[in-house]
Amino acid sequence: MLDRQAIMAIIPHRDPFLLLDRVTELESGVSAIGELDVRPDAFWVPGHFPGHPVMPGVLIVEAMAQLGAVALLSLPENQGRLALFAGIDKVRFKRQVVPGDTLAMRITITKARASIGFGEARAEVNGELACSGTLMFAIS
Image (cartoon, rainbow, N blue to C red):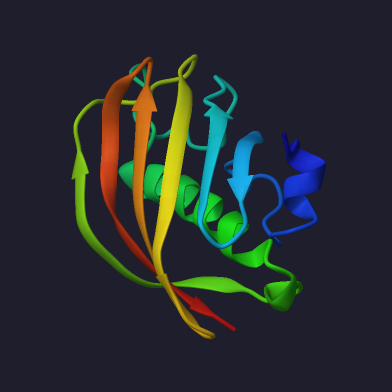
């Protein structure tokens, strides 16, 4: 299992924008499973939405992408590189994610070349689908 310190050794994200608390399974270049504890003091809570905080969908997608970046950048040949969004396709939101939830995410890398990678990602709360989609990464 990778904790936040180990995750930060692989990807460059830092608070308040590091959206992974732990990676529980990792097969470098193939797949990863990770979690984010959605905290009541998260930076977006006061404004999205006052009195009824809902995790922004773009942050859910970003959390899944960070997990994909861990899967791709944990390969020795990608050490020290960046994984940037190159595309987001077929993303669907199925349930709200709120403070107190644990966002459980999984990504499977479906195609990877030297500078491009694709992954099928999904995020769940208590086994209920919250978001899914196809993510495309540019490795620079």
